[in-house]
Amino acid sequence: MSSVKLHIDDVSLSFGGIKALQHISFDVREGEIVSVIGPNGAGKTSLINSINGFYKPQSGRILFGGRDITKLPPYKRAQLGISRTFQNIALYTNMTALDNLMAARHLHMKSNMLTGALFIGPAQREEIEHRVIVEEIIEFLEMEAIRKSIVGTLSYGLRKRVELGRALALEPELLLLDEPMAGMNQEEKEDMARFILDIHEQRRTTILLIEHDVGLVMDISNHVVALDFGQKIAEGPPAEISQNEAVIRAYLGQENG
Image (cartoon, rainbow, N blue to C red; front, side, top):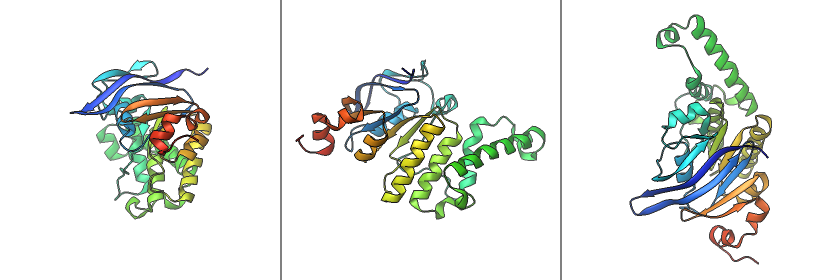
């Protein structure tokens, strides 16, 4: 059995009287695709925001690779190998797709401001090395045709793909995907699902996915966690979760059978 990559231990998060997360615990094992499902307001995005450090839980612990990261700021977690996409696209819309991916390489850059500005010696070699990595991602995500396009001019589906590329440019060990297919048409969804599976299989990246498309979740996930009103109501393999009565009532809005 693979080792535990991410351990969520009794995490609770509140905003005033609103209990966004209530005593949530589960594991994400190395090499898995784990999906978190639930209706709107279930606490899914609050969970991802807690994992990457945007929110600070009032209680509980979050361990990554056995290390307690509960109190670390977001940039420290990114340095450890956690990257994410956002439910609402967060890109540099006036920059090209290529430049957006290059910007994500800043965590791996070692040159200082002076050598970077002069673009000499080590800074020049480093720039070339980072560009090679970014070009590989562009090829991997089939973005060659838009590499020099201004992001703000691209279709919604392509911007989602650029955002996925930017997350990959951080070379994550854990990739957090917050509704990566929201707002897409069927063809775009199929492309994104294919890329997620390729990231998992070819890059051996551990993935935590939030997605409303239940059919897709059941097709690509190794493990599923279901939330409702900030509480975990079920956890297990997709086939088991798809038949769980509590999940059907809360998420699908109908009785089983």
